[in-house]
Amino acid sequence: MKVVGLLLCFAAALGAEEAPNIFFSRTMPGAVPAYAQVTLQRDGRASYRESVSDPDEVPLEFQLRKTEVDEIFDLAAKLDHFRKPLESGLKVANMGMKVFRYESGGHKNEVKFNYSQDPNAALLADWFARIIESEQHFINLERTVRFDKLGVNQVLLRMQASLERNRLVAYEQFLPLLDRVVANQSYLNMARDRAGALAAYIRSNNASNGGNKGKEAQ
Image 1: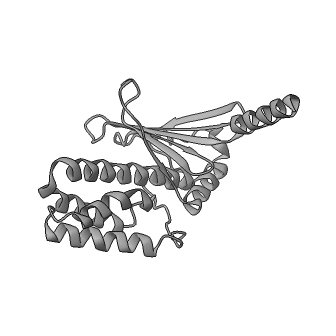
Image 2: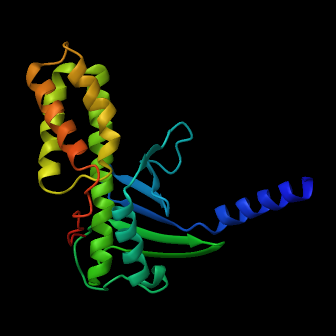
């Protein structure tokens, strides 16, 4: 029995080691945030950070939908899992230094670029830009829900604008905060109404988010 248990543990550890993940970071001084990074596992688990050196930063953890994850990993495969350069070499403005890294089974491929002419690189960069945008909305909503009830409606307006432009991903992470606003009469009525409408939209689209498509952007 002990031998079987050890074999099962070894198999589980081997499977965990071989599970692929994609890392993305963007560095652009003067932007908000100036640095952001996302790590996405093949099963959809993801984490978001805004620092590479702050030991006290607790990364945001969330779950992407299967359709979102499949498209991201398909784009990585089209880019040969970042084995080839992506930088265009053209003299263009600073559009933020971006890093793609693919890890699987102990192997790691990484590529850096400011601007790429590869349409798949543009699409993949945009997927991660949308993830960053979504986590920024989450951070702002969580902060205002806790500390600035009068500011919640403005945050929801900006979040709604991103949603209408197809810029939000991982919708479900917002539901606990939206439900909290709806249930608490200390928030403005317009904020509660907007939170309720957003929550209803997210729930109605819970099983049909496959229409999200990345848009070309650097």
